[in-house]
Image (cartoon, rainbow, N blue to C red; front, side, top):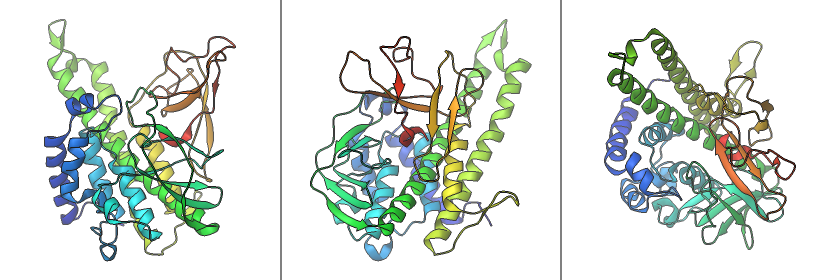
Length: 369
């Protein structure tokens, strides 16, 4: 197994690093708030062919592998690009495999999104790109469906992501039964893998910014980076980052093997894990943990992955917070749900349950893993 970049992937990295540097970045991300979508940058991205690059060449796409897409995702994360690229690429691949990917989706003229939680009571809740996607693919019972319609109303969230609930009305059935469930599960694994790669890119740039800052910021007449306690904290981060990148690369490698019909292995006792689903879930969790975080107030919530293989764990302010937490909370006196994600794995102070009138419920595994 060679998880290093090929020459072609190095070229892909360089091309998209230049693109995201020139067309996106923190200032563009702030300008795209609160929805988190830069339409002008998306139009420029369409010119590169990136929206359809993961679809097989025989079907009109670029023929890129999942490992190739992971390279692009890391560069997008490193420049915090406010673009629905990951969800669109994953959904385009899913539609193509089901025979439902048209030219508008391939080009990016029609933004496609994936509901990362099965439909409940006719609604796909907290769709990651629900506020910008015109075509939604979701699992409704044992049916894989595609729904065309206007984007949903954005849900307020601290990440300024294009989250929205979407009503599922008239839909096209792409597949039913075990075939539908298997296709959906695979798409979720691809989504987890590419989201993990995006997090690796974000962590990479965060580390670079942190190192640059402690070299410049002075205290007591010296750069704070000269203090041993600061050095120790920063010295731990490259290992976490490299570990997350390695695991994400292995997940992408396993995904490409699965596409070729090769089955994976899940033998924890022998430390032999090549199963795509397991690696994709592990990559998302580890990439989310690449930057150590600690909660600042007491709370508990439940974190789970969005698949049948998911595991559930509790989190509290008693120790370090391994990964973000998503929640939905509803005051007893108000209608509707407030939705959000917190890097400290707890609702922010404004949503923290302090009395019986507020309660944390329906923790949302679909966005933060």
